[in-house]
Image 1 (cartoon, rainbow, N blue to C red):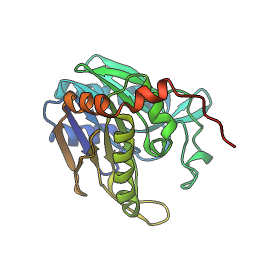
Image 2 (image 1 turned 135 degrees about the horizontal axis):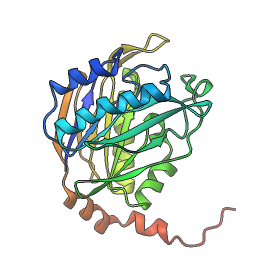
Image 3 (image 1 turned 90 degrees about the horizontal axis):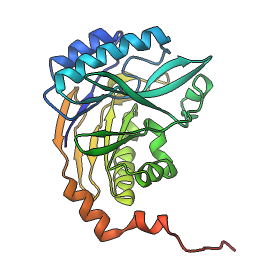
Length: 250
């Protein structure tokens, strides 16, 4: 599977962002955008539909699927942080951020999500965890047990946390025998002044890390399904947790 990671600034409008991306993307089975690449203000449903039309242009250009980052959207009287999955035909499905960040105050304006998503791309099963949802091992394990072979992680992480995020990606990938592909934003400040400086990466199920640095750009790598097969045959972590022994805690 050919995966592209977009490491971008925050844009003021979807059309501007997509035009920037169209000048940089190449053919890929999957393109992943970062969290809050359009800022933190929630989109109306009409604005969300317009965003999907723009993402469809991107999907057509790469010839595959686009995970449209993490985007705040007003849905039924509450705001959710969602990751839309878009093909050249349009919106396929979306997942939601289950646990908005308490540390950044996100959960004061964004409601907890209720749905994770898995979709098929180029013969692979792909799941999505938005930003800090990757910190909850139960969520990654649930996706892996549901068949995910790749977990994408659209995220917004400050520079001081980027080394932690890479370590986290390696652990989630290794313990679940999956790839973790994290798309992080770059070139902007948090409200408290901390800087976001990229740090996107792809972690393999066998402990390798491909680090895309701090610069803006679209970075592409080939994933190998034999890495998944080797990890699952050798370690059998998922088999173990599917049929666990009775364990007591005294």
